[in-house]
Length: 83
Image 1: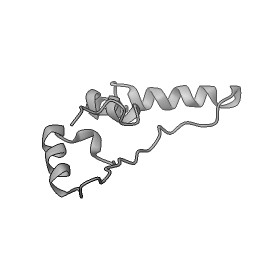
Image 2: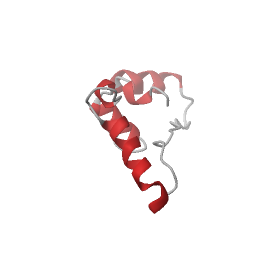
Image 3: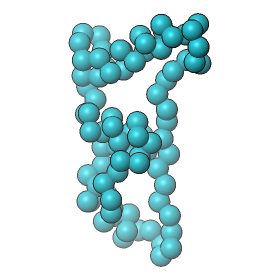
Image 4: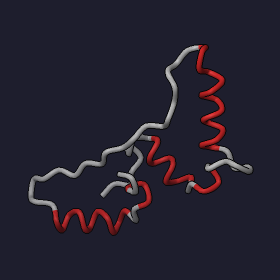
């Protein structure tokens, strides 16, 4: 799942259907957004992390992420296009 949010899903589902055994299961393993434990102690740091991850200005990585791919990833793959 390190790249599953970038798949071209019509092609991906076709290939998965071709190689998956009858009755088989396909699963995508995801990773969470880096966040520190909840609570007042880390709230400022968590806000800085989110600005860094989502921001589109200088020194932010959000500008390099495809918004559709990010939405698929952060929805824990619940927003995948259906097969």
